[in-house]
Length: 327
Image: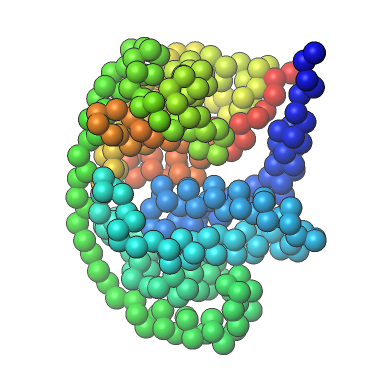
């Protein structure tokens, strides 16, 4: 006799959807705040995703919902980032990661480049006050400290700010990058799968994570290659909100490798009625000429907008939600 299906996944998904109904409107602002803290669009997206996950878990442990969802999300992000910063030592940085350096993009980046020089608590205080215009009292609550400590942190932080520039260095392309692009643009699912290590982690950030080549093949890799057929018919079949179809055509996407801030990123170009546009980004981490980790950013519109603007390429967003069901 077949056991009944486990109701836990559907229960959790329903709770997650209700959570996002309240907190997703603050997501873009959360990304912007994370961007000031981390100084990297990729790290900002990771911090945003981690903050939402931590907030969801923490909310289930609270006796009552926070009265100010926006301020509470910023508090969760701040605590996560400060804890992460304090735990990270130079020897913790992966050997293949490029050096973290200030980005010489003008105007919008200038203030943030200076903020890199501040200790975590001071940086958070300056951003919350000077960028998000929170009151001293709200900052104290967000940072779990006192108004006097916030004033002192602001005074010290503003006093430390001094201009500094550093040149970007070009990171070498991973050995598997060209092979991945060739296999993807040929629509060769077998060749893509063969590029993955047996221990590979493959994820659509914020949506799903798969372990090992076969699981990745059935879900993520197949979706990356052929998911456009469902996108075109999203109004009936679901997958994304229909408003994000935006004239996409049922034509297989292509990938192109571009250098961005010392890293190599794959741009996923989709065909539309009015021309091509990027709808997703992918980062690869290679080991021994194969792919050890693949992170696809399809449901990350804030990251997509920023990276594509910096690269000077057109883009289309897919929204944040991946569970839209077909009718």
